[in-house]
Image (tube, rainbow, N blue to C red):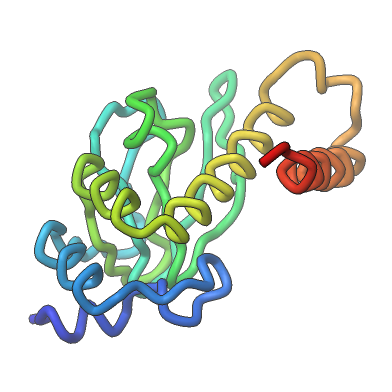
Length: 178
């Protein structure tokens, strides 16, 4: 059985590259207190494409596959490892999930109600900035993958286009009037 201290030590906000921010002890305790630990065996679907659950997840340990179904075909979008956040777009914006997430290995996730996570990111502005940056990146990737206007770009060019658009967003933020 995992206790609060053990769960807190796995939280990805310590020196994790995905977030690069250390939550205060109080914020970690708040997150653990308001979340559920969910264990998944390989092959277990953690969340379904088009689902409307108001929860998001932090992958404490294990590995998951992110996929979507398009015209009856499964398309693997990628894999996530310990420390990654997923389900945040759907949970924070109350929209259908854009992908299915399936455990590839024995996996443990922290299931967080969207309202509690929103409360946490209100308390931790740096975390909010990092979460919204990740939201921006994933939304951009989804747009490149699903919007017909981008169909003219071949699959090899889309990562370059994505990187270029990210640079524009960063440059725009730096040039914003104070």
